[in-house]
View 1 (cartoon, rainbow, N blue to C red):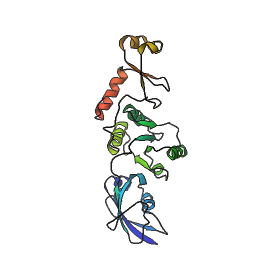
View 2 (tube, helix red, strand yellow):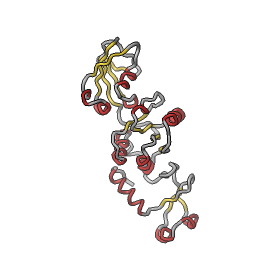
View 3 (cartoon, rainbow, N blue to C red):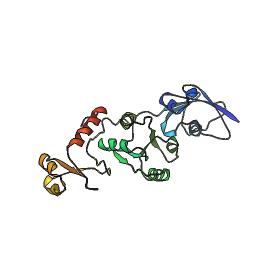
View 4 (cartoon, rainbow, N blue to C red):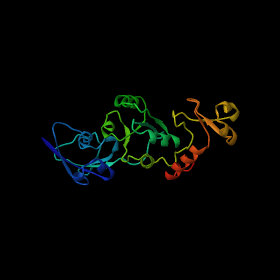
Length: 235
């Protein structure tokens, strides 16, 4: 039986029980085990892991752990791929709406199961957002984040900060219902689809070419502006 010690830094301690936070954790293991595997056995998902050091040497999560190693694990640095696209698990409908409102490509269905999520990630380079750390530990997940909060606005703030999305937002450019980019549309072309008061008081409209949902700056728009204000995002 081999033994190594692990020390996790900063937000990685969110995944540890109180008795292990900020302390060296002794791990016993058999055969060849990677740092990634042992970290996940302690509850820390690999997409959350950044810089790794072993006895002061820079290593990687795939490094094989040796008997007596002292491993230090830092969280991945904030930032995102050049084209941030997200996949959200089935419990994150309100977060999906907020991120789509900000203009981000977000795949979501309220009945996705783990196998479907894994299949999508196998086909597309998307960032997985979830509160299920076991789902985040799947081998197919390259980019991902485990949300700490249960509140959708706080979750939105977490995602914006973690992936540094502040300068990438394009509010009101994507359909909240189906995720497709919106297009401006001439009012005359959609008159038959508008309620009388909407027809009378509004002149600027956008439409989703995929699901035909129509958007205008009514009371719902004012509510969304409040969300943007809370998230410190300009419309």
